[in-house]
Amino acid sequence: MEPVPRSDCPETIRELFAQISPTYDLMNSAMSLRLHRRWRNLAVSMLGLSPGDRVLDVCCGTGDFAIPLRKAVKESGQILGIDFCAPMLQIAYKKRVPMRLALADACRIPLRSESVDGVTVGWGLRNVADYESALREIYRVLKPGGKFVSLDMAVPRSRFSRSLRAAVFKTVIPVLAGVFGRRREYQYLPNSTNTFLSREGQAEWMRKAGFNDVIWRDLFFGNVCIHRGKK
Ligand SMILES: C[S@@+](CC[C@H](N)C(=O)[O-])C[C@H]1O[C@@H](n2cnc3c(N)ncnc32)[C@H](O)[C@@H]1O
Image (cartoon, rainbow, N blue to C red; front, side):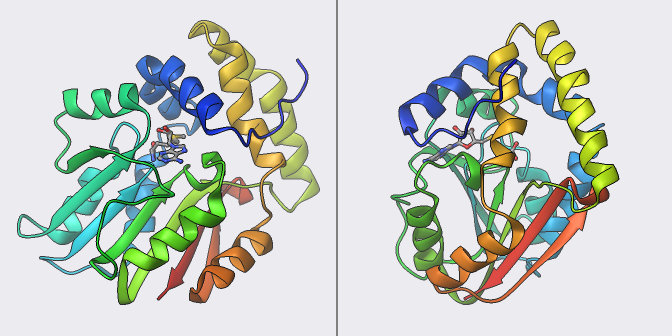
């Protein structure tokens, strides 16, 4: 199957996630070898949150950041998840995730400026057609001193890891995607990593949006990366 380039059309992206929403959680666990929970915990720990803090999860999808975030901010904290795809949010509602949910675009966040202590995005920024606007919006809603983390797939730096990854994309992913009946859609997601920003490119866009102290941390042999920036 031909690689599918990253789409810059929000409607196409929303429709893609609507199509895969029923199988998203299963596929996510399978593709990450169930490690995504560990990576989420690590990303949340990089926010340095305290009990009672207010946090925003942008592109929250089926809400899997809710549990680590709730552990960090405790019962007294407030967590809002936003996503522009209603079927993804419906799965989160059904799972009774411990956060409030709202149908909203990452490029028009329905919060006051400087109103949250931390922002998470998981496998989201790459899927936002206008990620520059989303970064500016995330910066706007963060309080001064607040932190933002983006957890996403990445292209490994080592040639060996890149070859292994290419083999997995060619063999394992199409089989799994075939089992779930969504070959093209699940082919899109990993492939879009190749046409998204590099680690340095993403850090640069974060700085352009205003973030400072931008760092990143590679995981899973460089196949996953967490970026963090401060306001
Ligand atoms: C790969 S899923 C990630 C879901 C979740 N963050 C997670 O960690 O599993 C990407 C999500 O980004 C959402 N998304 C893409 N563009 C968006 C936008 N402009 N505004 C809000 N959500 C968006 C999609 O609807 C989808 O739910």
